[in-house]
Amino acid sequence: MESFGSVDGPGLRYIIFLKGCPLRCLYCHNPETWGGKEGEKRSSEEMLQSALRYRPYWKGGGGITVSGGEPLLQMDFVTDLFRRAKAQGVSTCIDTSGAVFSREPAKLQAMNELLAVTDLVLLDIKHIDSAKHKELTGMGNEHILDFAKYLAEIKKPVWIRHVLVPGINDDEESLGKTGEFVASLGNVQRLEILPYHRMAMHKYEDLGIAYQIPDIPEPSKEAVAKAQQILNTEAYQGYKNS
Ligand code: SF4
Image 1 (tube, helix red, strand yellow):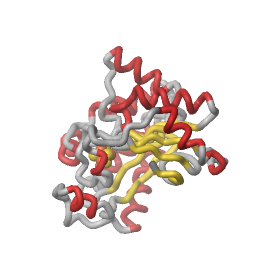
Image 2 (cartoon, protein in one colour):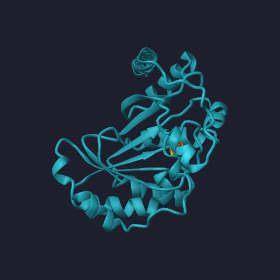
Image 3 (cartoon, helix red, strand yellow):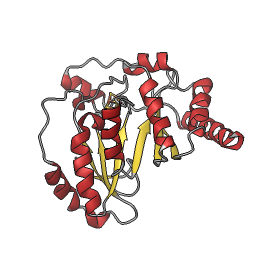
């Protein structure tokens, strides 16, 4: 848990990190969430009550964000928590990779039940090219892009985030295609570049996991600004042409 998260959704938010993730992003800064079995177990009501202690700080749109790991792996828990939160008038947000999305009817029904009590989805697009996405995360991006399209179909507000990793997903062609894709959606309220950072390297040492990209530097401020400009330009052109 993080009591005063300020980057994962509007306002100040109580962030709950759930364990388990089907991806293995080379830059992951939460590798301690990968193992799904050995976390602390909490009930949804217990989590809601923990979060509500911070309600006085939520003026200006704050609330609860569930992140991970991959929160959609524990969809029933998140749905139950968000139902309780919405009954108290609390803003709810999911921070997800979308990797487990499926249009298979039973799964879609469970997803719809969750989305009915979710105000905002933070969705990461890690690489617009599926083969390169697989190199970066261990999985192709088909489910993720389909989830983005589904959220557009049902007009669910979304913030798209893109972790900028030098030499991996910072080329103009990939950024341009990402911007075009985002522009085609029509429900994206915010499109953010998150600069890759190396602050999690010590976690890998502590966990005894090899860090796969030790030689990749963090992007410069100029590179981040340029990438944001390309994304914005493509997004703008896409809206203009649609
Ligand atoms: S989806 Fe998130 S938690 Fe999972 S490996 Fe990637 S960065 Fe880490």
